[in-house]
Length: 104
Length: 252
Image (cartoon, rainbow over all chains, first blue to last red; front, side, top):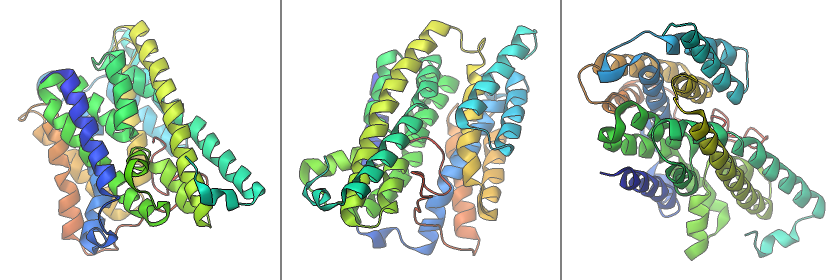
């Protein structure tokens, strides 16, 4: 698979999901369990992504480095209700700073 | 793309809806800079980053796609596509809500589908009358689309200029971005339980399965908690009155 094919397949899948919503009746997704699962799916995926991006290194081994410190700072900023861009920028600066000092 | 019924709106209401739509568009679209920079850091070129913002046009899915490609390269592409699709599932649920007032057919239905994101849905469902709902949906969708794509281009060019992503902490920026996307969703005990279980699944499976797969496995936490507990049903999308949905992240 080339990168372009991957990009276009992913775009098609996301568009199809948006489009299907205009064709199906509401009753398809209004079940109690269905609606609970669909609400929780983004939570599970994003929590998985946080872990993978923070503590997983090359080859899948768990690895503690500058990313973990940066994410800890990000969580503190989120607790202080900081803006999305501030959280992302400060995390990058923390990791870049630690690496400039020769750690992580 | 506002259509005939919107002309029956009072000028003051129309002005207020347009003001809200375009201010949400500028504020939300600006985050495209971070997406563009992270996309090229992940190994995509400027055009591929731009294609994601124009064709996928749903922020969480876009970040997830490039994040998994960054970790596992092209070999992780199937997992990246699956994760992007699962995160985009919510847009289909928004579409069901929007279909109730948009009344679209044919090409307009295709345009409406592409512009169906958190913000257009939030502004649309927040208005009182159907003409105002339609006006809010279309203008917010178009405004976010324009600014999100312009900002993506700026970010991709900036990311190219920066070079080595690790040196500038862009890998940590991606991790922090996912934290910020998760944060507003942790509003119930079920959500927190799901997040903790998903985190354990991802961490424990990472050494044993290819890159990208741990995130898909983590999605099982939603099934375990969602089907396993007896709690309140999931919420239908609700607007917070400022152009965002309650419990949604700040991206399109």
